[in-house]
Image (cartoon, rainbow over all chains, first blue to last red; front, side, top):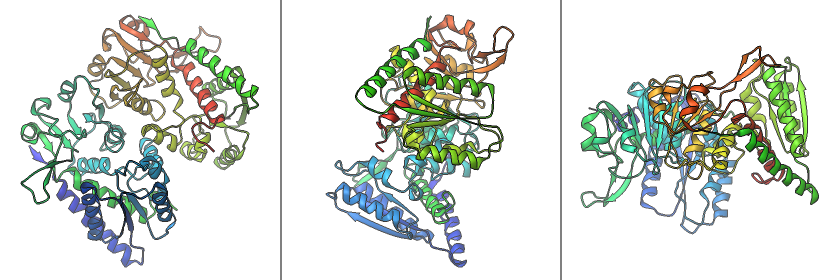
Length: 294
Length: 294
């Protein structure tokens, strides 16, 4: 069993991005600028956004954090989105999800100019990804694919089983894994809460991408010898062993599954750091106007 | 074995659409208007477009056929698209694919106003479909789903194997079959040219949607008893038995596969007629401004 060290790969890519930013600045270019909008004080969201802002600083981006209280109206948030859309200094921005119940995530996501949608959640980017066109790739799926690439793990013709059909992981990663190319060219099966024989299907998998958000779902007897297992789960469970009072739990029962695997990602330190790096890559592309020329 | 009679279902839906158009006209509304753009004289395209125009007339739509010779420039075609985008009388339009080599299909498709994109090929509609938002559904996948609905064939929790990963059938139909809802909620496997054990996977399928474009690909020994088989193949093969000089060949070796099936679509008369009906449904929705309000 070999560990896929997402943290190390992320650090490597951050260094590459930082070098490119230095070159851009040295040649008189504009420093990429990411804005993050955070509504309320959800613990998970606070952590994610803080990590994103810190990562921006690490690679030399400019970053702006815009905070709203839980009771911000949808109209106020839409006005903020429009200001960011129109601000020529902002290359890309994100609105951290989830949003409070009284605000439509769909409406906010659609209001974001797709040319600044560095989360890759806007229908234009989702559609272009599905069609294999240049776009801002959704961050977590792109991070997973990057791990296959960096570790040179063969995907062509292999059977990839995706657990979960969410808009931000399951569906997009299934498309990326089946697309022509490398990584890609997998036979892909998508399982979810309605799947009947999930163990039987997992046992056929050369690659399993677990993104159900159910801690410890994938057990040892569901995985064949030599499989590659990517754990996307990041459920926050209470813990008295950590300073923060919680720990991150993956979808994979690591101790049982790991011994059978050729490759496996840990939680934390696997997919998580790669997600942030994907966001940085998209922001760099946005700054360079590489996907959309204007 | 029971036959899924796409021709009969299509006729039924056309009648429903025609009634709705009558009501719209009776209450002083505008007659839905579809334009079709045809470049060159490819036999298949000629037939498809002629069928679409005739179907429009059958349901009471207004239709306009715009023809260009094979040597039309990309700029001329783009100008045509822009005129149709701006013409308030045109509710929806299609540019029949394939286009000649010197014209970028991607560029033309993206130039179409997504609010008039009744083929459902524009990234906005592809993305919204993937996200489960209201949109113009791609015609063939929507037609397939409609067959499951009309015949009340259970899909929930069943294993659907899709053969082919094209942008216009394989990928979108896999998304529709896995989405929450009915039809939907399938475990979905997408196979393609790189899949190694395609027979083994097909043998597990409760539902097979064959969209490879390889005549007779799916044989009797690849299908389990009681499966539902949807044949999307429409390869034109030369024939001396037909007036036109060709016959349509499906991806399924019908004589071998049909006896094992619970349900199967024939070629022709299965998915084909449903595709045109999906286009009509999209045009009706466009005319009523039901998906996009302006």
